[in-house]
Length: 248
Length: 335
Image (cartoon, rainbow over all chains, first blue to last red; front, side, top):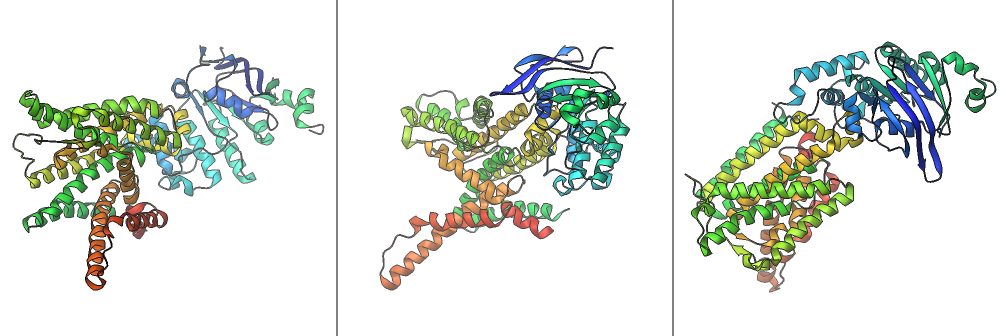
């Protein structure tokens, strides 16, 4: 089967620093593919290029077999790619439900509709509430987003990614800043989603990655040094040396 | 109904009822004041669509007001001096021109301005407005610097704008319609995207919205409404001058919005009312003090020229200490 996402020869430099260095990666439909790497390995730069916020210097990004390297971010979203943010990126002054409803709206196409009140639209409301129920936030739907905890914000990010019903979900460190309990809740949430969506997970938390991933790619200084099953990666010497440390 | 709805209704009923009462009791001046306030409120409500709901701080809104007024004055001028057809005094032609010209101006300049953000956006919107200002100043035919007297008001069937009461009525109905229109827009799906882009533009883009187009659309709607307000203003003052589109006027409109409360429907209206009335009250009370000083000590000091000083102080205090402007004051009590 053709890869859903296929990256070849991707390069991106900032001044003298190579953030992405001849990166090749493919994500198969249905898999949860995790990317791990030490701080500064270029994980976030990679996601920015995938969703179109940054342009690579050279290289090609193919999504569903189509070259999307120069497609702007809102079009990529339309093509079926969605992302969550490492640093929570929600619309804080809007209600929790409004944030999710906006994502539902985005999936339903353009929003050049000026007359009907969006908040009273039963279609939007029901879908938003169903998504909030899926991530366990239905009770907080009417609250202002800013009033929720960090862990809850992370769950909102997942609900937004789900709302898009995207073919590919790019999750940028969904566990960032979470405590142990919250991390476990997030792992359970992602386990429930896994298999229904293709996910490219960028994550720092090793336990989470090894618990969730079908395949893991290891990113070091902008280059992928190994790709394989969790067991392959655990046994890979280069990976142990570069990232997991001698005692891993 | 919420407290806010009640207050909105009460304020709008008061604005409808009081000015005619003043007029009938021989205080025609207050009707004039109310008409000016109402027209400027329309412009402020339109500015609030992009400034309050869109987070786009436009410092060039006076240009639309001025262009709208000139769309009344210029045809009327040619009707009088060049004898062009009577269509040139038709109100629908005037308003059509005002809206078409300002919408086009908003589309062209907005397409450029919206490529910038923050301070750059503020500066470039102001620069475009000043461009129009100097363009008008340079056209001698229409009075240049000195402005132009509009010899005849817009003509509508069944409506006589020379009657101050009817002119006020038109302005008031327009304000209500514009308020309802903006309310509808901001609560629609379009409005959700506009407000989301204000809160977090990148997120809104990655969700799949080309926020640039949404903002440009709002910018054009806002400009067209301000152009309409300008056409009314031209009819009200029957005198147009580049002064109307000066950056100070843009600043005043911004102040009305911020004073009243951004991103609220009633806020800009309250802001314009407070702005216009405060100006009047300060000038009056300073004149009173002048007379007092003259009467008692024979001191001749021209105080009323300096009304801007206490005015500015009051504005600063409100902006500093009342979060959310006058509407913030109302909403706070609701909690």
